Image (cartoon, rainbow, N blue to C red; front, side, top):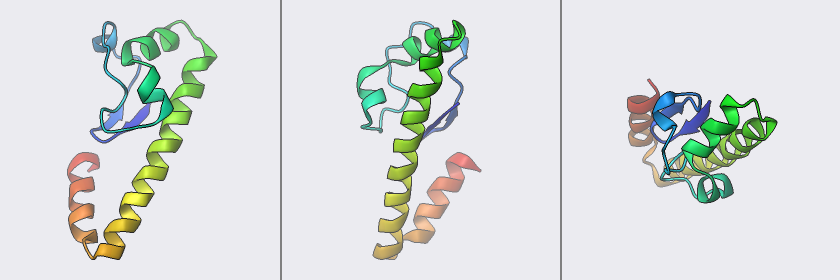
Length: 91
């Protein structure tokens, strides 16, 4: 399961078979820049351990960026708006 700006993304979903999209269009990590959802789904479906590694790399990058955004919102005094936008996606 990948963490994205749109919530959790399950790489096993059949809807990603032919997808050329990155895990998260708003993410600039190496995984999103070089691997598609379709390719990651293929790796997941075939039991390739690389799938877990790539999703983990993305999730770490996403979490670091998320924390930086949170820190900026606190510093700028906009944390309540940030919190509302996060809860709208993540519940």
